[in-house]
Every structure is written in structure tokens, then in C-alpha cells.
Length: 277
Image 1 (cartoon, one colour):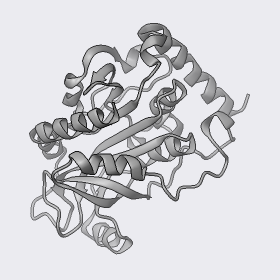
Image 2 (cartoon, one colour; image 1 turned 135 degrees about the vertical axis):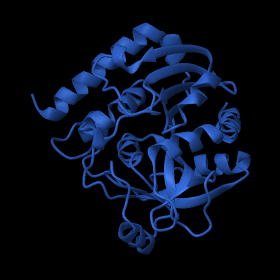
Image 3 (tube, helix red, strand yellow; image 1 turned 180 degrees about the vertical axis):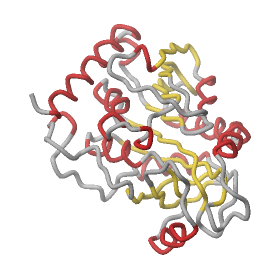
Image 4 (tube, one colour; image 1 turned 60 degrees about the horizontal axis):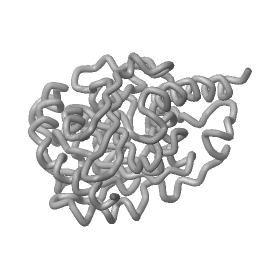
């Protein structure tokens, strides 16, 4: 059995579990998969008629071990739209493989979820960014040195060589623009971490065209795009990047900024869900 085939079977076990646990009626008409980044997991409290399942109870799903990253699937409705909300995610820097990093979103896609909103906390690089700003992703740079598509090919996960001209759906970006007050389009640079970037690395990213930097999102976007999902990305700028900020960077700052921005994020995502309904 190839590694890709074994990965598909792991995901199929998770699919079967969630179909039974949540019920096929709930999955029918499911419109949106939400991934909540660092410090943003409290948005899951907005999900109505919610069924909450810890990652640890879902077969084959890895569990995050980083403060502020949550670790539960919340299924219900937001703004009249059925949503499957991942309150937290796992990262490469924790020691997970790229396939494990994207296992949860691949599961939701195989359950029939057509569209995804991937959120993250990011360091601001562009001159016009300040903590608290929200950036809608128009593109990304995968600088992690890894991809969820490497290894043996599994047709269930998409074509061998998927096009990435439009990873982030113009339609979903337009919907976000109709409800966002402080959104700006930008390029997100995904790095491996877990250390924050050096000032020299930030200068490099500026020259490469990045507007914000973080340690997530790019692998999920690559995997979902390959599987034919519509993808939107949203970065909360929690701090200015190294060399731009006059103070040292700290994870506690990221979590705290996420909590402070909770109201703005809640309003934006709720409005987005209403537009999808």
C-alpha cells in the first residue's frame, strides 16, 4: 500500500466517523469550512446549534499542542450558513508531516464542503500595515520547503500537477470585500518556524513581495486548491515583523492581539457567512 493510499484510508476513517457523529443531514448543504488561527479560536463560540468534537476524538486527526491554537471541530450555522469550523490547526514546526497538517481540511473536503476560509495571525511587513489590520490573501509564497502534494500521487486529493494561478477565489475575495471595513489585499509568506524571522529575512520577504508573514495556511490552501475547493484567506496582523517593530516578538502578543480583534473578526466572518447563505 502506497503512502498516499494509506493517507486516503486514514481520511476515509475520519469521514465515516464524522458522518455518523454529526449526521449526513448536517453535511448535506454544508457551505463553508473555517480554519481559525492563533488567538482566533474564540470565534467558534458564534456557531449556533453547534456540535463540538475535540480533535482527539476524531480518528487519525493530529492534535495541536500550542497555546492559543485550540483543537476542536465545531459544526453548526453562522449567519444562516452551515459551517464546519476548525478551532485550531497543527503546524509543521510541531513535528507533523505535510499530510498530517492538511488532514483535517482534506477530511472536510471529502465530506463535500465546497468553500473554505483560512484565517491566521501574521506579522505585518508592508509599510501601511498596523496591528489589528485584516488582510485578505490574493496570493502566497510557500517558503516552508514542503508541500502536501509530494510523494506518491493519490487521485482523490486532486491532479498530480495542479494549477495555482488562482489559489484564492476572486469570488470569495469579492464577498469579503463587501463586508470588510479595513481589508486590504496582500501576499502572505508562509515560513516553517517556530522561531520568528530575523530582520534580514524580513528584508528578503519585502523584496519578494510579501505583505505579511506567518507559519500556517499555505499547505491547507495548496491541498484544498488541488481538490477543487474555493479558498479564501484572511490574515489578522497581530504585530509588526522583526526589524520593523521596535520591540522583541512574543507569542503571548499574538494571542492577545487575536482576542482584541475578536469583535472585528466576528463581524466580518458572520457577514461573509450571510452572503454565502
